[in-house]
Length: 110
Length: 119
View 1 (tube, each protein chain N blue to C red):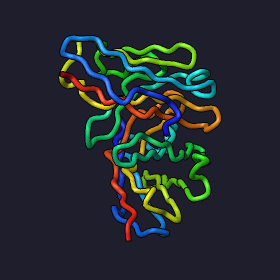
View 2 (cartoon, rainbow over the protein chains, first blue to last red):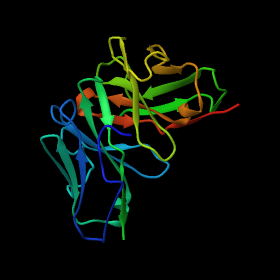
View 3 (cartoon, chains in turn cyan, brown):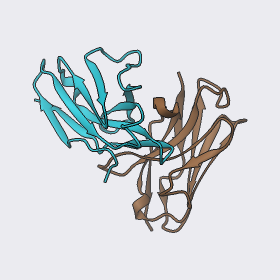
């Protein structure tokens, strides 16, 4: 059971906008920034969003994120087939003094 | 850009110690740019942070594993290591090492090392 809660799956057609939610608590999302990771099968995660809404260089601006209270969301606009992957939210947890992760959302591009 | 590579046995017997090493290239492990973490992912499941070694040499562990885990650093080899004692089948997972910017996230990851605990 992951500390952060994500829907197990999401889907969309090419060109659509898809959002993935992430819910936590006061010791993690409620008091810290959220990071998002993208993982393709058999590979390591890569950081997609940091500091709740910042994109590392090389990440398309189709990816955006926001945070409100103890929840966060990742939005992907102009969905492309290469976006099909697993997406994980993560947040620093003050009790753990480390990151906690969501259970992951498998995004399917129909 | 940091490059990380895990190495170590892929098969460990129950009750024995899992040992993995992460070799960092692209920067000195003691430069202070990053701290260094281990994360694991059981097959088909999510990610679990195991622990971190700071550039100071101090370590912080996930309380769920604290009694069994040790993370150390060898600056002369630009490596840091993970030891997990008394393993069981529940410790079977892909183990990743990562460059850690604390609240700002895990910037660079190794490709992962699959470790299976089985007799």
